[in-house]
Amino acid sequence: MVNYFSLSGKFEEGSAELTTETLCFSSLGSDHINPRGGCCSQVTFHHKFADAISKPWMRMSLKGFRSSHPLKSECRLGTIAMVEKSPSDVESDAITGFIIVKSDNEYVNSSVWQEEVNKLIDHVRRVMSFASGVRLQAPVVEFYTGDKSEIIVYSQLRQASSASNPVFSSGDQQSIFEAAVASFISPPSEVKNLFIALEWYVMDSTCSEVRLVNAMTVLENLISSNLDENDTLIRPSKEFENHRRTLRRVLKQCIDKWSIDETKKPEDILSDINERLADLNRRSLKQKLDILVERWSVPLDGIGEDKIKAAKKARDLIVHQGHYHKNDLWEHGTVIREIVVRFILTAIGYQGRYISYLGGYHFAQFPPKISGD
View (cartoon, helix red, strand yellow):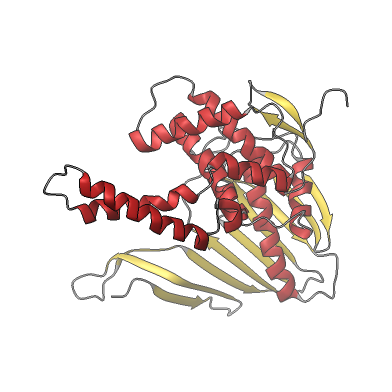
């Protein structure tokens, strides 16, 4: 069965071309030659100009971006800027700004430069989404070099209308923008699956339960992605397997003595329990968190162990029982989100002011200032 079709076309003048590999139809008709409801997720336009430019540049259009003034930074790939181009009262799903990178070098390999810059602007978009507290959609990416241009248009979900918990205000983003650029050019440390963590952090929700689950998912992702087996297991897996066999023998003896419903065979019960034995060799979330905190030197000043345990307990009740009966979900959510924010700020090497919700909305300094400094 054909799911997608290819489509290409040229303008009469021959200077422009349209292509897509993702064309699909809601219906092909009974004869399969009268398709209806055509749509595609990505379209590419190529255009050739009469005059050539000397230096390549790339621009990514954005939805949801707000900034009271243009953001600008310099790096080895050129000059990069992030600008709001529309008033704040425009329709929420409209393009509101862009990221643009212009090469400072006339003699750059344009294809290599395009590939690197494409990764740079995507990295910056994700970090600035985190800063804004909302996923910034990017429906259009343009690339210009010599006398040619390539414009890619993406079909995307509707832009979230507002940020629930911005980490930086729209008038205080220059420092995080510079950190976003610098962390791509020269990462402070190797961080695995950072993009997944950022995506989970900005996932839109107005429900406190979902916000807590999302924040805990970010934390678990960072921990599982950046610790190896030696960090997460109490004993090496091969060594524990010997103990596991011993435990199975003891359990079998106990189960044989139990009074069991005839519908449940002893060997089936043993098999069920055996699946859970591996959990005995896994360190707790708090133990793994402590390992990564120490390894990355993440400051957790003002966040006590009791608060972390209480937040995890609330998350577990939501996930396993489907509800949480107390009214302190906001507090639990702010504790975990604050930990996540400090992890991400550490990962990108940021230092400076940010918005903290721990104990109430306020501006905080990262890394936290220790009393007496």
